Structures are given as C-alpha cells and as structure tokens.
Image (cartoon, rainbow, N blue to C red; front, side, top):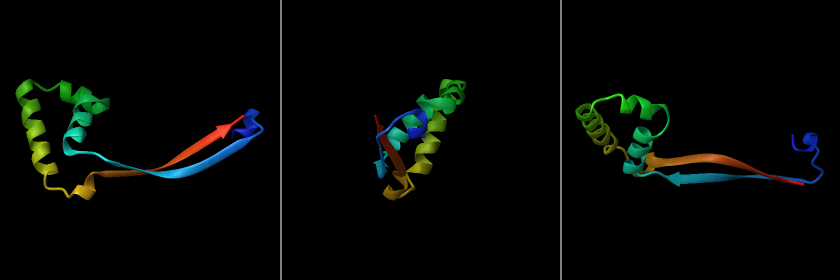
Length: 79
C-alpha cells in the first residue's frame, strides 16, 4: 500500500498491545464516550445511578483477567 502510494523505503512490523482496564475506567468509557454516552445521557439522573450501580455489581464478579484488552498493532514507516 505504501509503495503504491509512491514511497520507496518501507519498514513495517506488528507488536502485541496489552492493556489492563480497571472496572471504574471501563464504566467511565461506557458512560462518557461513543454511542453509549448518548444513550446514557438520555436517562434521568436516578436511572443513570441505578444503571451504573447495576453494571458495577455485575462487573465486580469478573476476574482480573477479564479486564485485559489485547490487540495486534501494525506499525509502518515509509519515505
């Protein structure tokens, strides 16, 4: 792809990405970003608090390993 765009020297590699997401961070992501934020914001304050409490109660049952996100990242440098 990079060569077809006119780059002569291309170096590409991949590496694993492993990120631990805490329960609180996950709750914040789901209530403050993306399409979930719009749905969450449409709830009244009492319902928001109940929703977060219910989610927290269910997520607290998970193991630490369940909060590990993994992906393969592809890096590329070209000139």
